[in-house]
Image 1 (spheres, rainbow, N blue to C red):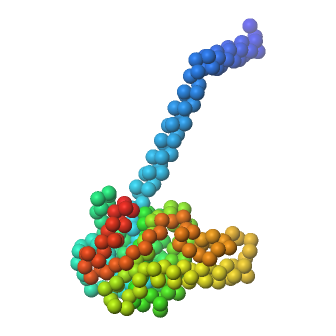
Image 2 (tube, rainbow, N blue to C red):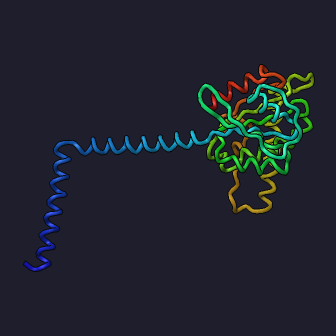
Image 3 (tube, rainbow, N blue to C red):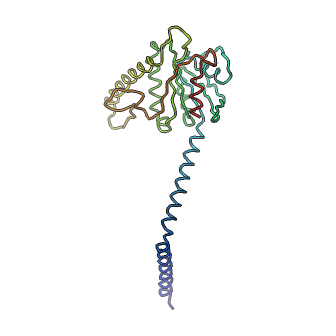
Length: 254
């Protein structure tokens, strides 16, 4: 038998084998079961990957302007005591235990030349964000707070990972402190104005490059438009009791 005949015979045997296998699966209805098992295994694998990625992100960034009280909040949560603080030039990092798991709290310096640097350093592993706002000086700081928040919320990594966000009206122990409802409404108005300003600047520069957009186009900005879980609370870090709302929120974010 020549080589071509042998090859044809082998091909016929392979074809015959595949036909038998197919016929067997169809006759015994095994194929749907196999497909179902494969789908389940793939689903379990994807769920495991997603869960592993979420578990790996254990950092909670404590953000805010200088003198907002971030380090005081951080210290009171972790060590239960008030500390005298100066403007930080580096981050403070320590672990915080909740009843649902361990988190790592990162107190990010509030100086405008440093905050985005340290924010970028930890954003890949960020599970949640706490924006600490000085409720006493809020009206004066409104523009700077909104600008910082705008840049963080539109960051591509943060947008993709969608961490939980807490906006914290701090220093409620002081008599002239603004409440969280007023702070929320003023922030929404300022972020809306900031968005319009940046959109105009973008349209004047480069229309070809698609820009990220905060909220929904054609509507005034509100926090409810974001895909993030946004929560609001008031606090005073002069005592542990003044941070109960933050502790509950951290436990739910673990």
